[in-house]
Length: 224
Image (cartoon, rainbow, N blue to C red):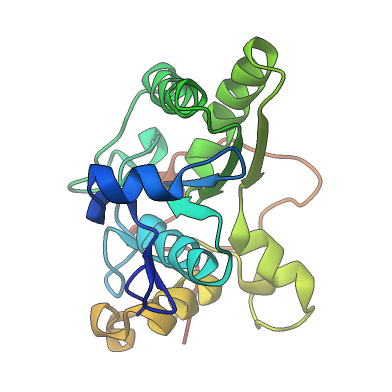
């Protein structure tokens, strides 16, 4: 894993920096990365923090390659109402989540940071992120707010047939399991992964399921 440094010279993780270091690095060209995830069941084989562990690592690696990037502490909770039947799901109400995102974007603007990249690791956050980002953009037109909202979809589109099941889609499926294996293999137990997948869902229309309607394990993919 990376340690948030660029060639050993500059820290990029705000949580590890002091005020002197922040003053040296923040300027009008700074790009701030915000990471949003979730704390929820991903089946018996993956950690509850999967939705922020991998996006946070993406953010750190971007910051080691681009000199004007800083990374804010990852938000480890999200809108997980659809997972609330599974033990230890920690969920934020959508309205609260919109407020959190809006407040963070406003704080960045107040600190003269007008360029923001949001990296999201959880499907339940997509709606709140869009609402908050559009609202803040309307209030502060000078801001540029970009979002990688669903990396798990993108990775399956970049290389077709990379994964056997649904191009890697599926909660705790091939893409998510592979991602966490790449950065924290110590947290994944493939021997406990589900071997069956739920029937393929409709592709041209979105149905808003509760996850306990789809799976008894919390996972919908078969990563093995």
